Image (cartoon, rainbow, N blue to C red; front, side, top):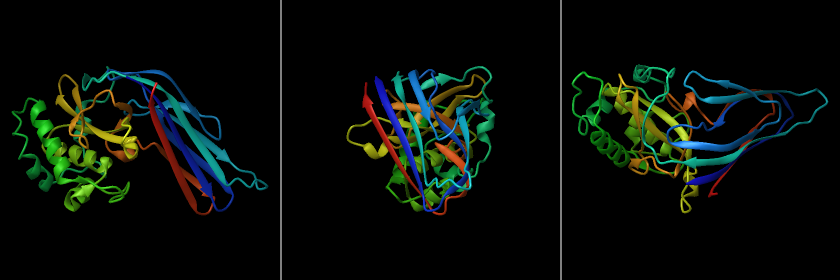
Length: 273
């Protein structure tokens, strides 16, 4: 499926903005599950490209306002066309971090005994060979979706996996975090994935998140599981970035000086090309 994506982030400020430094995780890469036909980014200042520690394409810019300026508005645009291939199982490219990195606790997806107990209902103890069973992982993802029901506005970007699990509610970000944290609690490497999801009747899910879970540590073999939809990723999914949790690959992260109170409006449209 060919999907055309447009992602706009509109910032408004109550006072003049003096300084801003922002980093964007808004560039999808061609890989086993997708081919990027074209992609463009727009920002208030010149963008500088880098590759982060997880292999994501990131861009940064710096804005410095003059004393006489009265800048109270900022806009970041991302747009392009991606051909999705529906490939859920894949092997990491050479040079990517070892799967063992994703066993480490992160602030939003920490292992916990309660999460381990829950996970053992679905996943049998590993034999020490660093491998996981796909059918068990799919059963676990369905269990997580049942334990953490999807409820809009029930959490925020600082909610941890354990908090969402204990509350029994969250959004796609939380469901992905719980899946990642449960897997880590069982000794299975897992990572958080940000992206887009196309569904004509679910515009609220255009900005989406899911989990990569390691099937074979030695072979760097992974599978991408969409907990929210209780399925493997398919042609509806566009992969943006991945990391240990949301904090490692948010769409935009930055710092600023001045500007007073900030309001932000995000608009995402996804249409078949």
